[in-house]
Length: 130
Image 1: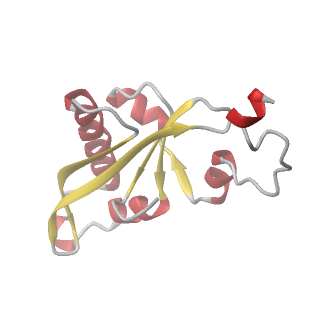
Image 2: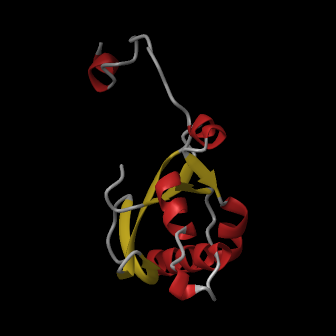
């Protein structure tokens, strides 16, 4: 009985689950773990489709930029933000110079949470996403 109080949903039937693996297969998330590992991340990393779209939205005035370089900048700055972070928690916001629309500075939201098998994973997204 004591265990039931600590885990009230233990005997509840799961109605629906949308896994990280399914989100990657559907294109809702983009797995960038390989290049993220090169940038210093130790956990798997995925981007939301919205962040991926912003990475690829290179203004014509910035023709010297490419999506791979912008992705690297986001990953490198994210890894540095983690190293500099002095607080605890699963969410971190950081800024970098990336021209999207009229904005020069771009904010990225980094969330570390459980993956499909409760392993730590990182998701990078636009600040207004969950």
